[in-house]
Amino acid sequence: MIQEVSMQKPIVLVVDDNTAHLQICKTLIGDRYTIYVADSAKTMFDFLESILPDLILLDIMMPTLNGFEAVKQLKDDETYCNIPVIFLSSITDESSEAEGYALGAADYIHKPFVPHQLIRRIDTQLELSNHKKDIRMLYGVLSEMLNKNIYE
Image (cartoon, rainbow, N blue to C red; front, top):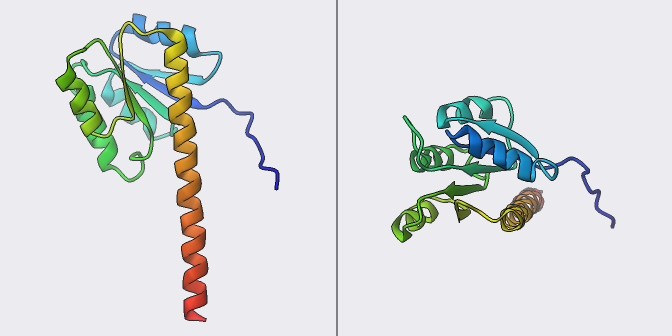
């Protein structure tokens, strides 16, 4: 069986209060992904009301709602909990990185980042996310088939 391959670029939402960082990300990875930017976590949540990205690059140090608080809200919401989040932060201490992973981040990349490493890590998380979607879909199909056989 041949599987259809989508030619649509994955959607990556970059969230950072530093406009220079947003522009750098757009420039470096914009040809590979469809990039949307948000300058705050609040703007990110407004954006999520209309478009679900395939992945979120999220800064930690932002005013009002920081990245840690934002990822908690994402992971607590059934609509957004399966979107992989990669922290992209200048905070380099081990405890912050550990906290990011504990909150459900898929990865943690230190600024300044190496462009080809960023791309590879985004690709890895997108691939894992797609496999997880496939598994959830297959689980649903198998559960439905099992329930159908049990009750017939």
